[in-house]
Structure formats: structure tokens, C-alpha cells
Image (cartoon, rainbow, N blue to C red; front, side, top):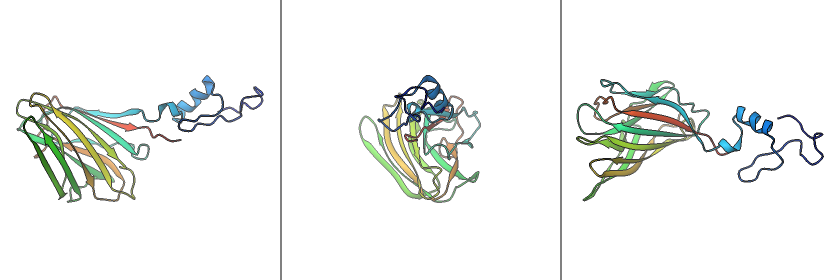
Length: 214
């Protein structure tokens, strides 16, 4: 920002931002400069669309190969009309390191599927994918959201939390999973489950969450 120390006697030369405690006076040009530099605190916490995928009917994978992992430490994935052309299945998540898919037994997951009569737990602590509670049933597509944490942090594991609902079947659920590899994740691979192919109605959107600090 431009130094304003001589513009007005009472305006500090460098207004500062802090979460819940800004000091100084920000003029319109100040806000514009900070927005252009992606440093304006009013945008922190916003969802910023990275990419939307609409898999073709014969696709068995939908892959986000650019996730801006050095910009965002939290990602948000929305899943609409998840379905496949082969039958009932739950969505899988795998990760890429250096552009290469990790398909080893580095994944763990746990979730509870809720319906009108009972709750059913599922889980594995050593498998080749994170199975999620987002699933399709016969005659009903699946919907859900996934929070993904620390994908670009090579000193910690990557973690996901998942919430879902299935329209006509009255099902829903929540759960999560962990990728047990201390590495920087730079890609996300989605499958409709059981190596099935997507239906053409599926829409997947990946967002980055603008970090709540300057």
C-alpha cells in the first residue's frame, strides 16, 4: 500500500490487519491493493473454486491434477448426482504425490451409514483407498461434501472428513479417513467405487479455502 503518513495527521502510515482487530483506516485504494495481493482479511475463509469435473459415462476415474496445495491448507469437495452405470457403490478417494497416483495400502477410513431403521459402521485401517459414505443406491444418486486437510504439508498425514445424503433412499452418514504418507499431495483421484464407471450426471467441484491468517 502507499505510505499515507503525511496525508492526514491522524492516519497511520501502515494500517494493519489482524483477525477481529484491524488498526488504522483503510481507504478504497488500500482494499483494492490488498484484494489484488490476496491479502485482504475480508476474503479469508472464502471458498475459491479450483475446478469442476463432469466425468463422461465410460470414465472410471475423475482426477484433479492441479489443486494449488501450496496456496491452500484446506480443500472442500462437493459431490452432486454421484452415480455409476454398473450398480450400487461407495465413492473412493486416492491421492497423488509428484503427479503419481499412490495406490498402496496407505489409506484408512471409518464411517457410519444411517438409514430409517439402523446404523451400519464400515471401516478399514489398511487399504488402497479411502472409501466414503457418499454413495449411490439403486435408482438414487448420492450427494455429499468432503473436507480435506493438510494436503500440501509434507510433515503430516492428509486427513478427510465426509458428510452425505442419498435422496430417495432416506440414507445419510458421516465419517472420515487418513492418508498415511508424510508427503505433499498434489492431486486427487475420485472413483465411483468398485472400479465402476461414472454416470454422466455426476458433478464434482473442488475448492480451496482461503486461510484465516495474513
